[in-house]
Length: 166
Length: 411
Image (tube, rainbow over the protein chains, first blue to last red):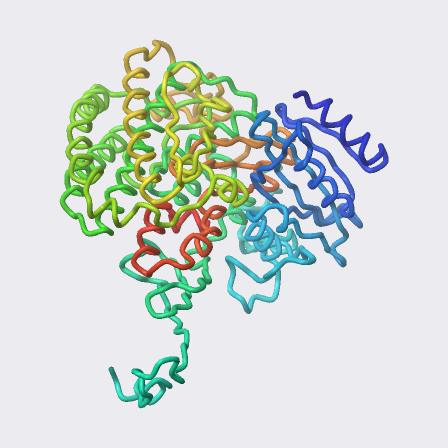
């Protein structure tokens, strides 16, 4: 199964305007879509008799503070084991309303992955059965993987870019 | 029983001989962990018990969370290797090599054949060490200590090979971007040959003692079973998925580091229970020995690392006597070298499943985002479903056979 077939099938089902961006990285197709389209798209890819994207490899949150209105993103890594084809589906949401639909009813494995994305990025997965922090302590009041939280003490002089001509 | 327990027990003082009596069938809560001698790691399970039977379980994870993904966003690429071997510390070379291959994919470095074969040997040794730990400890958890001693000396031997290759035993930091940091020494080759000769004997002894043992079979068959469909839905990978009957192995489906050159079988189970997981791991050890033998026999001549001076740390002698090597050494160690913009995903077959690295680079000296796909984190979710309705001792055995490593679970 070629990547072009997946693009054609998705465009036929959801219309060309539903797919914002198409890219490829080392053979893995990546498709950017809107938050509303995630659930129908994953259901379609799961149920399609040829494509059968029935394995959720991973779900990664990401934060782009400079992309206004699209700061928080989720990347769904799905894998069609029968065809041995991987696919990334990306969607972005504004940071003041980071609401994504849950996909736990489709993939049981998404449960902890979504909790992890909530824990570290504050992405809210609507309809999730138990959206609580998973790795960090419960009374933490921020989402540590967001870019506004620097990792090290900013007063360290050996890390100042200027001194190294960077 | 203490007095308080007697007071709080609603069944005390009731006539238990009376049929359909008024006693309350109350559930009790049992805290298994966070540090329990039978769970091999920091795991907490809050079990709801009905007598001896588990009704429900709730896991708490994150006790040894060390924020690796956040730390990685501040570190130059080569400094992240030391983070990866602290994840699945039972098979750290696999983590190291997986990370190196991810970065090589981003940088577009072609690794010479000899280095690829050397990596295969080290990765299979790591798989052997991982499976030896998992299976022999599973036997210990069912009460068989002797078999553990037969194979554990070979795990010690594998660690000596690590030491010979990189100087460390547990957190190996083995290999470099572009290949290995040093070639096999005579001692290393000798030790691998001793292993190839000796481990089969130990393994046979172990299998003879445990595999068809009535007690072991009774304790593990039909315990903690999961169907292939549920296993896939729960994101199982590695031996746990193969025990359920799905032949997904990254080494054969998406070969990396020349795995396509070797002949090996992918064992699968049928029921997905604890006994099947044990058998799949046993067979994988034999296949690993086969791969190591082939790689050693056909080890190509040539360089053991790629010619990538911007990323490959030069030899120490050169750093002292060669100007260029000194410059590159400084630049690499200080993390001065920018990586190209890109987004890559690379996965390897880790000791307990598909270990993936999702790396987003914005062209800086550190990753913009690095996500580790830890197999243990994903499949451990299924644990409550697998132990519901079984007894506490079965839950211990099930957890032991799932090969969940706390360091990997919590990053």
